[in-house]
Image (cartoon, rainbow, N blue to C red; front, side, top):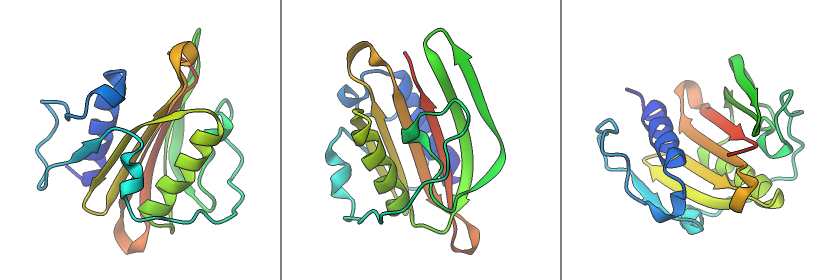
Length: 166
């Protein structure tokens, strides 16, 4: 199983165990990775090397996606995004590649999430792969999860998911 799939499984498991900030242990049935994952409660994401987010304009958000879930600038979407609507709001999942580093991708989404009033709930580094999660406070229920992992030919593979409600 690829590192991206392992990180995605861990990020989704953490999202299912709200509040994520109270549980720093990976799911017991998570696939065994070569190196143990380090999950930390926010705001420990800052423990990663500081990355300056350039003043770049993101691509327009996907239909139904909030501004904090815009596609990273220059990102090339792979396949059709998965989106859904429900009583609690819209949600979706999209994968894409970019030439930016995993650290730059996470820094970009962290700044957008915080600007939208979301609170950091998940920060994880495993090798060169990065994962980040943020959620709304109380009944707001909005959330964002991003997993960025080095891919072939120097690109970064990104899995981005969001939800507007609980």
